[in-house]
Image 1 (cartoon, rainbow, N blue to C red):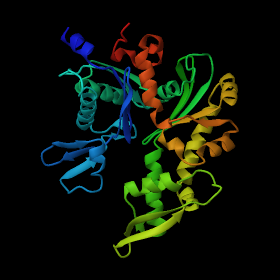
Image 2 (image 1 turned 30 degrees about the vertical axis):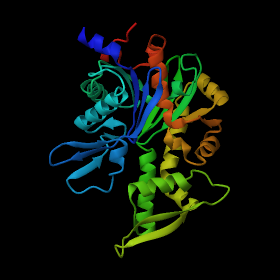
Image 3 (image 1 turned 60 degrees about the vertical axis):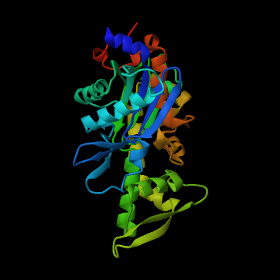
Length: 350
């Protein structure tokens, strides 16, 4: 009874709980939070010092007893208590301008397609401990497809490739369910790591994570560009231990990323091969839809088109597709209840 009363005063939210970024959709308002999934912890006391944007600023700049870490690895919870604190922070941030002292919202959380029952339970439990009165889970690829306004409940083949920070989810969806899917642990973070490894092995340069990400965004590509781009790469010289700057070009970075990019493309082809012929015919007509931050890698759509012989399109604002999809489900739970996974985790209100 008390929970129901608090629930009426709370705002239902959809969460894209990403390895790199967490986005929060509030029912009736849209996306209100877009912050890094980073938490700064004092290891001596166990105290949470900062979450989100403030914690991201500390990455690579903290003393030994303070660690700025990501509580999610490859799309799943690796540190339960810190994940709970991060979710609690976001839930309270959503309600800070309301009169709700103890928010008890209904929450929809996006999860990778291939995670285990134990990992699903960890996400659900973390959200409940953070203050949610009911938790519903939806596969990220399904949420992304709904966010991209694809007709997921029709008898049509819809193919979505969601390239996030920790995972790449590839799925073919029809009649409100996932027909075939693959989840890879190759995504945005792995591409940044590829640049760090390339700098170390080929250029004798030690790079920071943020520098590698900046280079990837500025000049990273999956397909040969019309014009060769250049960017400065600043780090520490392995030989001298002193600061060093090297100018690298898009051809070098494409070489660094090629193995991981080709793995993503190969998995897309394998998923197509496992898809029933009628749905493949639909996908040939409708195209493969790319979402997630990793889909913005220059020329990736051209490469996938060349390798699969299918049309490929990147949706507008691909970063927010999963959060928007979770929000659309929130707005019409009755109509879209069939897309939720593990209904035994909570009964969808009628």
